Image (cartoon, rainbow, N blue to C red; front, side):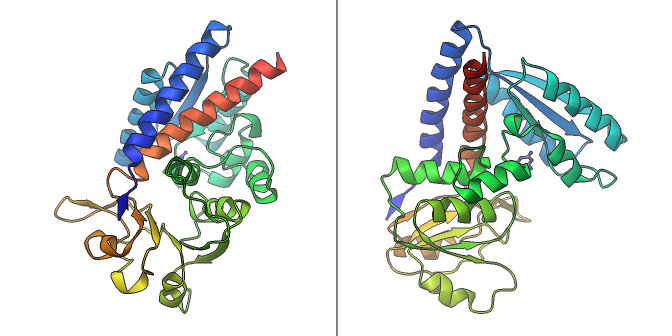
Length: 283
Ligand code: GUN
């Protein structure tokens, strides 16, 4: 069994990003990411602070907009409009979840697809689905990067994605399909989930339930990717996979923490560089 070291892959990616950022800066384009946080959600505050720190470490300019909980939808739309028009901004990220009085779909669709470094805009979702170049959501993109780094070819393999979220499950399925895997998307209503999992060469668990994937659901020699980040009552951070019992059966497995998690921010930075390069092409 080989541990897939997302922390190491992420460090390598950040190094690459930093080199590209310096090159862009020297040619007169400073890569810049605008991050919008509405309200006081503690987890979101932590994520946004990590994004800001990673930008600084990689020579990407970060422009933070911390807005009060009572911010109206039209105020938020007006800010996004300004950022869409600002030629010095390459990426716009609105941290989710948004307060309940704001329509998330409406906000995500208002971000210019050319600056949508989260890959959540319908245009980018459609491009991914059609196999066209666009922005791809960071967590599944990071998983593909880990597989690439370990020379794991998914072509022809049976892959099962557990979870159908717009942020992970659906884009993950499309990426694997585009890479010629045979993909099954399963979720909380799937009837023969265990059977499908057991048949899979690649298992991606993104369902948000601690220890959901148990040893009896995993094929011998499977590649298991754990997207879960679950905090237990005793404070422990665990994935969606029962690591101790599953790991001995796998050819490769991601740990939690230190697996998929570190890749998300690295790919956000990478998407911001991609957008900055597009700015150079347009100039
Ligand atoms: N909240 C949790 N994950 C994400 C993410 O990848 N992007 C944004 N914008 N918000 C999130």
